[in-house]
Image (cartoon, rainbow, N blue to C red; front, side, top):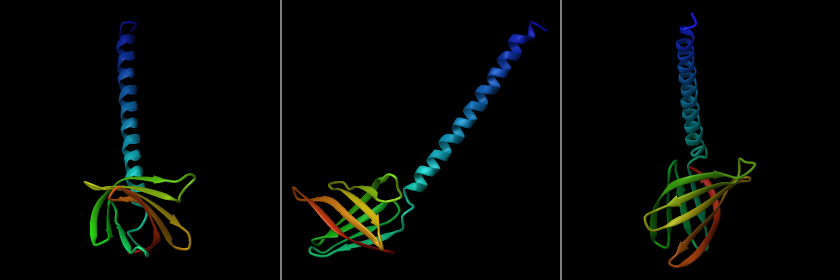
Length: 132
């Protein structure tokens, strides 16, 4: 019986390690589900501004900005929720030659600020959004 104690302890250790590994895998899977769901919990939006006229369409993981007869297709590479949440939401947009930061706020309607650049100058656009 005493000779079997090390074997029993090793079996117990293996079972505990398997359980811990299993629980960690479930934790990471749930974390990935929550973070990916969080990135798309706002609706598809079409945002517009006047003087100058511009349009920003926002979908699940992409966005399109139209300004000055130019169209830029962006990927939404990051979504950050302001603290304590749920608003504002900051979206980081990335295109091959352009970047933009979009701040969405919810008041009576969706409001938006877009910080980007036109040539070498930073530009801040403000407008309102409609749900598509």
